[in-house]
Length: 123
Image (cartoon, rainbow, N blue to C red; front, side):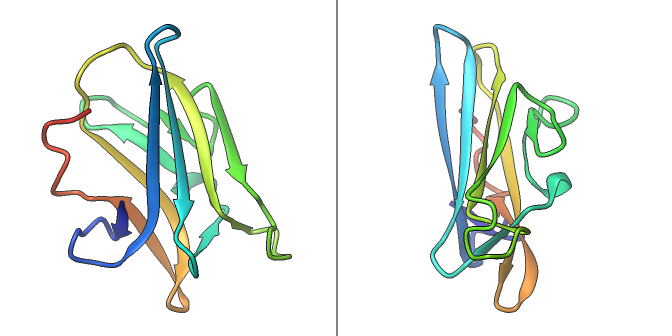
């Protein structure tokens, strides 16, 4: 789950889904907002990163192999999305990761982030 401001004691606003292809050494990531939450199409606020690496592995500004907004404008507003997905070449190993998407929830723009205190063992 991805929580408001990355706090596991806060509201879950989106979900992160991961898949890894051993054959192509590619990590696939997808975020989806929760029902009633609107994703915001903000390239600088859509990313996946590893604690051990500089910069983003995947982001809305073009890092990674592929990036795509999920259902942009689904509600008639071109700035609204249901999430994002992307992929990047990643060597096998253990990584501590963090993912982020900006959302509109409770009438305000919020950061929806993976638990900042967890994921100590990595993936």
